[in-house]
Amino acid sequence: MKTYFRSLFLLFCLGYASTLSVHAQKFYEKRSTFYLLTGTSSAKLNQFDQLLLDRGLSGLPNRYQTYGLGVQSRLNDLVIGFELYQSRGGRAGLDDYRIDYRTSRALLNIGYSFTEESRFQLIHYMSLGVGYLNFQMLPIEQADQLQRFLQDPAAGFVLRKNNIQRGSSQFGDFLTEIGFHLSYDLNFPGREEAISLIGKFGYSFSPFEDRWSMNGISFENTQAGAFLRLGAGISIPDRNFFYKDASISFYLLSGIHFTKPERFNNQLVEAGLKPFSGRPSNLGIKILGQNEKLLYGMEVYNLSLDGAASDFQNHSLNSLRVYADAGMKFFQVKNFGLGALAGLGYGNIRYTITQNSKPDFPELFEQRDFDGYLRNGGLLAKPEVFFEYGLPIQDGRLFDLVFSTSLGYELPMSNFKLGELNMAGYMAAPYLNFAVGIRP
Image (cartoon, rainbow, N blue to C red; front, side):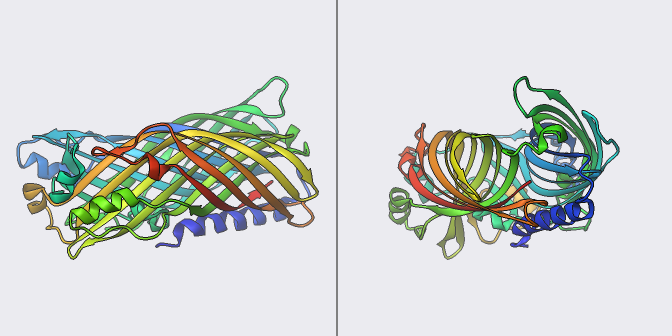
């Protein structure tokens, strides 16, 4: 399961290569798109809702809100792409606790377009991917004193399946979607790109039973249901696709962030808990568009530390970063390029301490106090410089396999407090990222 997320990128490359090799001689319809989406889907938690109803309580709202980003390439009638989604379920209150859940999904899309040379696209597609599930019942108010929290963190519970709080490589368990993708391109005056208006609808599900059960209850419906998503993006349609310096690239990135939570570790040791060791792991994706020397795009990555907190507890320190990037490529010499990017985005920091052994429902629901959770978030900025090398596949007739190295520095614009402890010093750090991607 731990290798699924990396496997998606390999499948993307292989699928893209096979698609192009079949149609390499035609090239009558080709386009690449980067887009953002939001939408809603039904997701009624039958077993947990019944547990609530048996106690005279109302069930959770039966829908969740989804946010995501994706990249898609089309050659002739065949379409291949990648999407990353975060979905938050409905919330409910009980006494001083809040019950909610969220899921994340990474999906590889393979589709067929019913349209040919047109601004309008109607694509029938199927998605294959992996996911993560978080279900929690935690106090509405967070602790404001870190030492008091660490001395007695048990307040509610957190259940996680394929726990990406321990790192994005933990993504797992097979998921799929079947649906339709509609888009319409609007000209962007003076630019090679077009604005693409997008709608998606279909049905998502987990094809294997009991893959999303935790502590005696099935959460299968968090991963299943009809969906509707709307969004917009930037597209390079076929009439401009062969413009030499216009492209949209997709990368898988990882690297080193030169930071350690030393002040936080001191607090852990004072509370009799084990400190975190090493530097945070980093795994994410980057989508980068280019028009002549102008660069633009987005990146998402996840920094994680985890380990044993005591003989009967585990803990994790996790930070998700989402950036919008813009920059310039200073020069391109054959397959070598050098440029700079500036990013502005959002980051959070989350500390979770969980007991290794918890009872099943309904006993878990009645006892409740096993785990602890602290969270904060704010704005981040970063400058970076990068060096890249593009390896043409079949003399560039297919795509370039791009290797990139970037060096930058993240600048927190908030305090990122856990309790009263300012974590901005941990968030501020230089980094060295390595990426491998494909560029049409």
